[in-house]
Amino acid sequence: MELTTFWFLVVAFLWTGYFVLEGFDFGVGALLPLLTRGEAERKQMLETIGPVWDGNEVWLITAVGAMFAAFPAWYAGLLSGFYLPLVMVLAGLIVRGVALEWRGKVTARERALCDAGIVAGSALTAFLWGAIFGNLLYGTAVATVLGGALSLTLALVHGAVFVALKTTGPLRARARRAASGIAAVALPVAVLALPGIPAAGGAGGAWTAHPLPWLAAGAAAGALTAAAALVWRRREGWAFTATAASIVLATAALFGALWRAPLPGLTVAEAASGPYTLGVLTWIGLAALPFVLGYQAWTYWVFRKRVTA
Image (tube, rainbow, N blue to C red):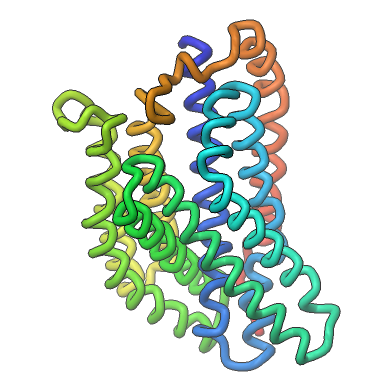
């Protein structure tokens, strides 16, 4: 496989991991006031992501770092073209991170401010990522809003199912009902937004010419539908797998659409670093990536049990 193609797939893999793992983080944070009744349940809900949320953000750092090293023109064009929304993403992540760290060290009044920061930082960041990529594909206000709505609703469903999977008692029941209700909103949004991803100019438009992004977008909608049905049947583990699959497939459709032109007027080959740089990166990546993946898998295994109030 050509190194340019290999590193495009690596970047796509890293962004996919980030959207899947941070997706439920964002959903849990945004749903905090909706699902909880009292301080004990708020602690219970936040403990579901407490051991993993900061590790999940490493995927973003790694994805951006890989873009910088392997595709410097893409990195520069994306960050300069979307400077303001990316600064807002950074602000949302900072506010959320500070609020999560300080929440257990402050008074009750300050704790309420931390909760507001968690909700605002989670919801804003989840919306902005979809808005950025929607605007990147089409450059219109409609695509921006629709992309943001898709990423936010997917994160909310993903987060609600995660809470149902990881908790017990009334909080689990409330999370299950919330997941069903949000899925009823997310499905129409997905039906509207997902076909637009492969239909963007980068995918060539006609599905017969470039079928894989179209198939991924259709499968993403199917996985989201399956997740709604599985939540209704109280199969939280399989429902979480389905919501994760929906995000994976939607991201695959996105990067399939970006393969021909990651930025308007810029091909992947034009955006890539030279062969020597890509070769060195490959050896570094092959040496380091298994340890990173192994450590994160071990973390999730250690904290796999449900959280009680």
